[in-house]
Length: 365
Image (tube, rainbow, N blue to C red; front, top):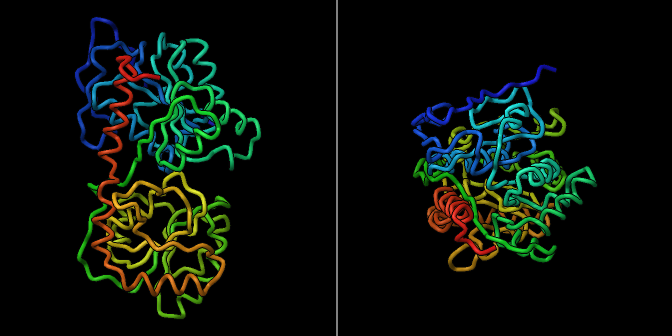
């Protein structure tokens, strides 16, 4: 397999670039407050470089926002996939060997803990675990699961994306926690008054905890009742795409929004989420989410009430059909307004603030 080589320019001390516009969606990024590329203020350690995947995408977006704020930041991935989209924030393993200091390690995912421990021993960096989900429950490798629990207990700070994860981290033994919900991109997902067809959207993930297998056998019955049912994402067996009116596969956020603004209802049977971004994106766009009962949204809405319809058991078709009937009576614009505070800009700004406080030693940990 050909190994991907990420471009890394080592900057001489008397040669400081002003901006970088590579893969930044038109943004102009400061180069890191005059800091040499050999001396990083922050390094993200992530499982792989497939930046279209949810948690990986979130980490890369945060790194881009840190760079935009003036922080000298890079990313290193455990697995380097040659087919992945190149991004100039990434260091390959050889580039990592050129680094002389790292102030903060931001660790994402159970698979990333081992490398972060090695870097910690070398650079004596502060360590943040960016906890986007309960990885220790579902990682297939027992050693990775143990490493993740150890990171929760021993890292200087655990940054979670929901109160549910904060409570879980504290129960495991986290020393310090910060809850920074990272919500939907309100530059993309907006309420739209467009005429919507009688359409249900189902986000598809192959992980067992996402519950798709429970819902797939019910789709033909929904179609018989006059619903058009579409899906996007991943299927464990590609042949199951035949139960949908249309299955889109992996698509970008803009395409997801296009689907949302012509749809009425989202069915999300996932019973375990760190936060649950897709229902937030759907609600912001005017789609009524029907979700399984879980704790990932607890305490995040101003009135304390979750503005979605919850089902305690997606296995029972009658409960799904009853929830759909209720969803049709709800005001989608009101639901959209309820979720507006959980947007990406606010969450990312809070995350950047935490990193700056750590860099200036103004955050007590």
